[in-house]
Amino acid sequence: MATREKQQKHGQQKVVQYLNEAHAMELAMVQTLGAHISITPRSPYRTGLERHLRQTRRHVERIESRLEQLGEGRNPLQLGFAAAQVTIGQAISTAKAPVDMMRGASSAEKLLKNAKDEAVSEQLEIVTYRALQRLAEALGDDATARLAASIRKDETEMETRLHEQVEVLTEAMVREEIREQKVFDLTTVGAADAVRRLAGRASDEAEAAREDALEIRREVRATGREVAGRARRTASVARSGARRTVKTAATGAKETAGSARRTARTATSSTRRTTRSATSSARRTAKAAS
View 1 (cartoon, helix red, strand yellow):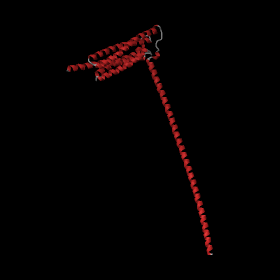
View 2 (tube, rainbow, N blue to C red):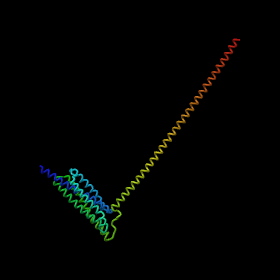
View 3 (cartoon, rainbow, N blue to C red):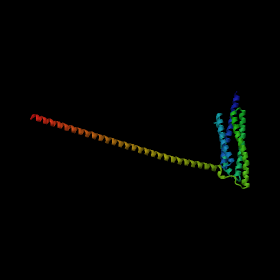
View 4 (cartoon, rainbow, N blue to C red):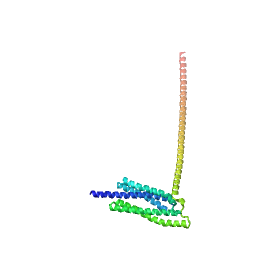
């Protein structure tokens, strides 16, 4: 029983080792593809490289996910080995970039030599995943076997496309070097297109910022007009209220004055009547006394 557990553990360690080797190889390929794309003009060949670069990045993520599932994704020994391979691969691809620019007498021949290198790299990846798949099948690791088979299919398809491009690029090299015909527009290499995209993005962002500033200015002006309108309406309402108050007060004063005049007239009339009555009574009294 102990021997079987030991064998299973050793088998899983071997699977993890192969996965880490494949992971390092894919990371190095990301660097190489990026370097080659940067010096490749717009063409079906570059379109294929860009598509495979996206695939390769997904391969890296899928392998990392499988390593985590196996609980060995952070094995220090294996990570150290993989890191060393990645470092070597990155150094090689970085060093190759300026060399790739100078190799060959024409731009077509530079691309042809790159395509040949990429085809060799694909063959190495294919046999690596074939070995990983067979190892996983022998150990009953179906998930890893399916992963290896899936990625190997992508690599095989890329190898086929590269073989086709080798023929196309060879013909382009003949046209450029032998027949002295212009085939590629070197102003459209990947690096130049990337700079143009960045410049376009910066221009778009600047335009968006300008539009935002104009919109803010319009909103501030609209808010100012709205506040001013509210102030005018409030002042108008206040003036109307004041006029109504003055008018009401004047009306009340007129009514009060009229009532006072009426009261005064009534009092005067009453006083006169009282006086006449008193005078008449006094006369009657005096007459009676005499």
